[in-house]
Image 1: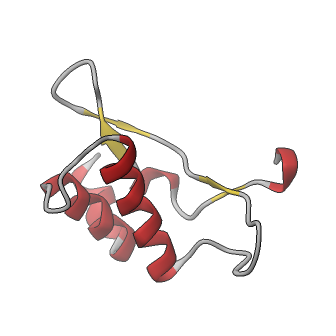
Image 2: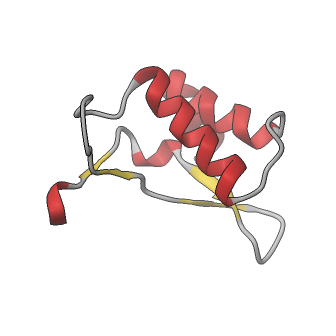
Image 3: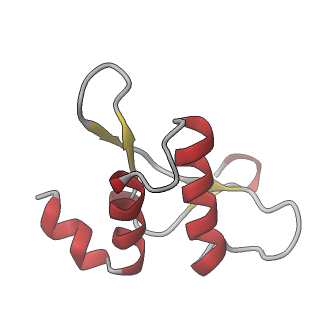
Length: 84
């Protein structure tokens, strides 16, 4: 990828609020490490996704969408079953 960016994990696991209507939209998360760790995984991945959803989309920390997205990261089968 450009500038050393890489796609993170399973792109189907990420979705965010659709700001135009009551739904969600899938998105792809890219990572360009400035320092270690070189991969975005585990707790850092979950914290980053939570930060994107609360900071960029202004969701409350206890919003059900955040828990749904994080569950998809922890349990990929959960997400694939919900969004088929």
